[in-house]
Length: 299
Image 1 (cartoon, rainbow, N blue to C red):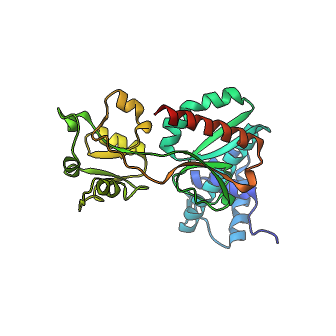
Image 2 (image 1 turned 120 degrees about the horizontal axis):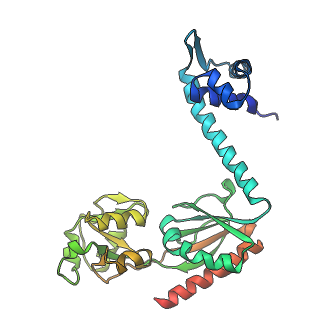
Image 3 (image 1 turned 45 degrees about the horizontal axis):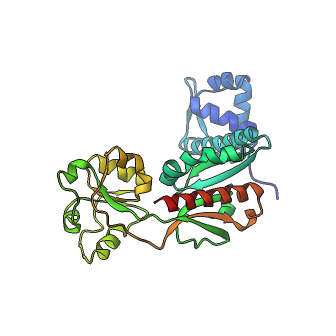
C-alpha cells in the first residue's frame, strides 16, 4: 500500500519557509526560485487540504495548523539527517550501538573503553543514554547496559556488578564527626533517586529503623545529579562509591556511614537474541565481563 506522505522536496521547502516565515529567504537558503517555493507550498497545502500560511502584501505568516505541522516536520527531517550522517560516517565500519545508564557510562565505562579500542580497533562503540528498559525491536540498539534484575524478554544477560551504595554528603555536613549514625542521617534532607524510589527505606530498614519521611526529599534521575546536589550541601545521598571515586578522593564528598545497601539487582549487559552471534558484540561482551571481574576483585 502506498504511504500517505508528501514529497520530500515539498517538506524541505515548507520547513525552510516556516523557519524563516519567508518564501524569499527559504528560496535563497535552498538555492531555488521563490516561485518554486510557492509551488511546493501550494502542492503541500493541496495534499493536506489544510492552509499552512496566510498570505498578505506584507508577506506570509504561519497558521496554527502550519505552526504545529512545521514543528513535527522539522523534528522528522532532523532525525532523517542524523540517520543519514550516521550511515555516511560508518562507511561499512563495524559499529556497536550501545544504550547505557548515564553515570555508569561516564564514570566507569568510558575511562576503560580505550583498552577495548586498542584491542579491537576495527570496532566502533557508540553510547547513548537510556535509564530504563525498552524494546530492542523498536530501536537501533545492538545491546544495553542497565541496572535491574535481568528480566528482559528476548535477551541474553551478563552480570557485571552490584551497586552497594552508601550514604555520602559534603564534608561541611559531616563537620568534625568521623561518621553519622543512622538516626543522625534520618534528620538530614534525604536526596532521592527517581529510578530507586525505595532506596532510603530499604537502607533504614536494614538498620532496623522505621523512618516516616524516608521517601521525602528532592528527586533526581541520575547519580551524577545526586552527587552534585550532595556536594552543594543540599542533603545526603545513597550513591555507589565506584561512581564517585574522584569526588571521594578530592573530598568533595565523604562517606557518612560505611553501611552499604545491598540489593539483588545489578548492572547487566543485555544482548538481544537476534544479536548474540555478532562477532563484534561477542568480543565486546568478553572484554566487558573481564573488566568487571577485574574491578570486582579489586574492591
